[in-house]
Amino acid sequence: MSRLFIFTSIIISSTLIFGFLSLKDNPRTDANKSYTQLSDSTMNKSESDMKTKIVKSDEEWKKELTPEQYYVLRQKGTEPAFTGEYYHLNEDGIYTCAACGNELFSSDTKYESGSGWPSYWAPVDEGKVKLIEDHSLGMVRTEVVCGRCGGHLGHVFDDGPKPTGKRYCINSAALEFKKK
Ligand SMILES: [Zn+2]
Figure 1 (cartoon, protein in one colour):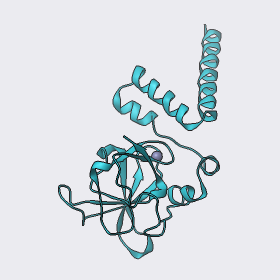
Figure 2: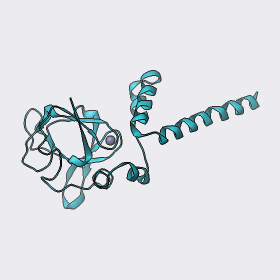
Figure 3: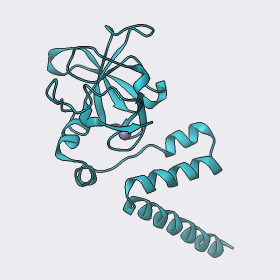
Figure 4: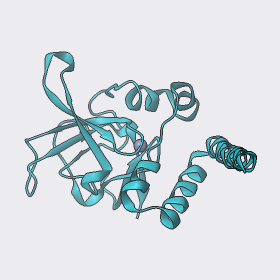
C-alpha cells in the first residue's frame, strides 16, 4: 500500500515538474495560454490569480527583453522624457505589459499630460497593476508594477484629470500597444 503511494507520488510529481519545465521552455505567449487554460478549468478566481503570477530569473528576463525593456521593467529604470514611442500615440487599442502581455491600460483613459511619458487616468482594471510605496531618490512616490510579472511600469500621481484625479505615468518601454 505504502509502496503504491510512493510510486503514485513520484508519477504525479514528475508530471508536475515536466509540465513546469515545458511551460518554461515555451515562448511566453504559449506559456500564458497554458496558464489561462489551467485557471479556466480547474481553479476558482483567487487560486487562478496566484497561478497566473509569472516569476522568472533575471537571466531569463534578460534573454526575452530588449536592453531598454530590461532596464525599465527589471531594473526600475526610467526612459528619458519625450523619447518613448507611445508618448504621442493616439490610436484606439490596449497597452499590454511588454514582459508578460498583461492588459494594463486602454487608449480610452490615455491623455496628454505634458510630462513626456504616456499618461493614463486609470488602469484597465485595478487588479492589473500593483502599487508600491517608493522612497527612492529622496522622494515619496507610488510605484506602479505589473500585477502579473512584477515588472516596473512607472509611478502614479494625484494630479490627474477627472474622474479619478490620478496620473499613471508609464514608460513606453514597459508597454506594447495592441491596436483594436
Ligand atoms: Zn507583466
